[in-house]
Image (cartoon, rainbow, N blue to C red; front, side, top):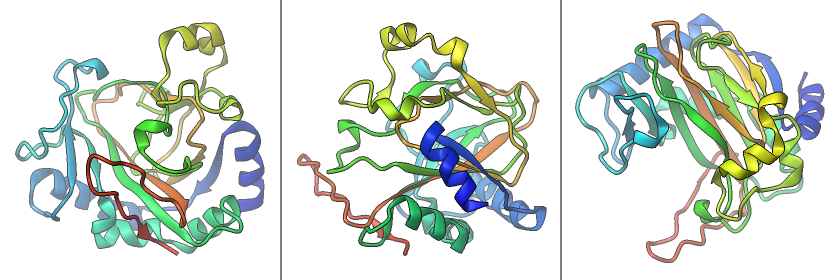
Length: 251
């Protein structure tokens, strides 16, 4: 299973690892993340971003942190602080994947572990983007994200969409992040885009340089997913304006 998934990931920039979490595993994770959003479970240093009222990515507010109990937070980072999420992201199956991707590395560390939430009201769209570049402030780009669906994400339910093979061309811009409109137009991505609907418990491998996006959900129920970015253990933070980050070693 892992070898086949890795072969597909290397060629296409994404792969299905299979349905690895059953309801007995998923239910506590969903309950815990809802408790965190309500403020019933707290950890120092958690990052919160609430969704926009319009559902537009362009209208998102930044730097406001926890704004009170709400199930409409779009993003919550540093979930490695929670023992339930840590137990999941440090599972041996993920160790084997990361070890193969970062073969020969000095161990595997964590860049981030975060919830991406499309709340029951629809959530917000996320445009075509790549997860790397100068904005990340690292001495080398990560190349592995493992995405676990906590809820079903069908084609009309905020599933991931990708442009297969785009990771092979590197970053569209040195900064990284959202792919500029002119690059999107030239690449004719709407004809090449592939939706990746999943059931709760399914796991996807995503290369950081793969162009990917997700729309709003029309199901009237949340679409929660855990995204974990693993990095080579030797990765260093290069930022200068603040103290360089240190990264939690996973294996």
